[in-house]
Image (cartoon, rainbow, N blue to C red; front, side, top):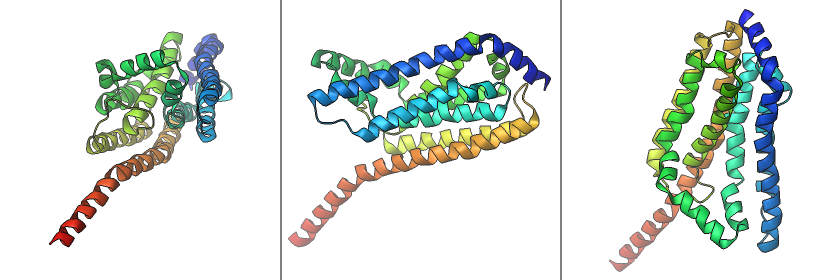
Length: 274
């Protein structure tokens, strides 16, 4: 509990500032998305309202993890911190990816700027950043470093570190999602078997880490908090990952189904021909 008290004293010094700094970018992208929807609807057919709702809910999930009552509790309760992790690093990215923001931007921008954005998406550096194995190292590997070192304790004492880790958690979660399921244009697509293998490794790494936290609390975290936080990470993460897995295998099924039909047709033709 002494560690919790230290967290509280340290956090009170930069809590309000960090909440404002983390709220700004999510508020900005929420406004930009809604403006893009208005502009797109004037030039093209209506943008699906379901995607707009997904974006709004996704941004709200992220905002609830970086500002408000949950943040106040998160620096005293590891369970609340873990709930924030699930919202910021898993649920918000998934909902926001399903809102297809890149597709919306490409529809909204003038042709010249849209082509410029397409060239950036096709660049080699984007191919490296979006590669599933690279993203998993950044995402799951980052979590292992956070909870198995003194980084988690230090995060509550240094505002720049606190900001960096929260931004990293969201961005790595977003990159992980777009590297597994393709909603927006993806110039650097990888195969389904490769992604399925990496996805299994990622889910395994996340599950093992949650059990490790349950058995071996991070520095400064009481055992009861580590147990409840580890269980929330394990079961809550599984629920969100289940949605991702369903979408992934549905896309795989859709990609394979036409080939199966084609093969069947060819087979029928050959049979008729004989």
